[in-house]
Length: 147
Image (cartoon, rainbow, N blue to C red; front, side):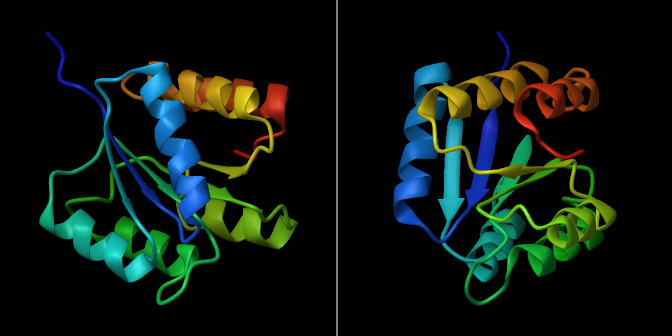
């Protein structure tokens, strides 16, 4: 039997964390989900615990923002190969470009629709150990996600 997916989210909005967690549980109750409310907490947690299968980062967080957190993750030998998806309210082209150039797999502007969030997360979860790049590119076409 395959081990459950381990997913990590760093986001300073408690409501967004709760929605994300509930959506993941609806998709697959076996998923291991952990979160942090700022970039410093995220980096500390990621360094001290099991490496997640995928990391989602908010861009605008206190202490250490998503960009700096992404840079630290990609420079860390333990974490550098973990796919990182930016998950934020921003849709500014400079934010998208910066994050993709720093090594983010893709850039998702937080959907306002729960059904859309479930569809996005379902696709990512199904492909996290397969061809995640192609799966994310399909999300780009369907939901305007940047890759």
